[in-house]
Length: 101
Image (cartoon, rainbow, N blue to C red):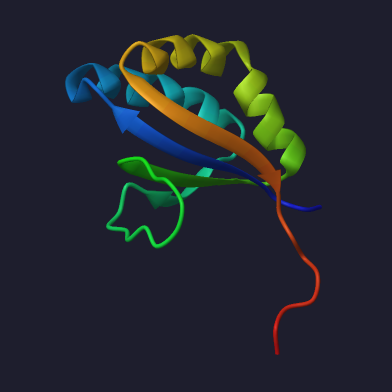
C-alpha cells in the first residue's frame, strides 16, 4: 500500500493561539497513524514562494491521509488554525517506483 503525505506551508500570525491547534490536531493525527517527517526546521527557499513554517506528515496510506483530514476531530482543529494562520496543505500519494541510479 502506498503511503500518503500532507505537505503544509503555513504563516502563523498568533503563535500562542496556534498552540491550541497543535494540541487539537494531536488526537486525529495519532488516530490515523501520522508521523512527522518535517516540522518547521531550518530551510532555504531557492525557487518560488514560501511560508515561514513547512511541515511534511507521513501516513500509512493515501486513504488514511484523506480520512484524517476529513475526520470530525481534524475539522474542529482546522477552525483553530484558520483563525491564526494562513497556509497551504496538499495531500499526496507516495511514490514507490524506480529511483535514480
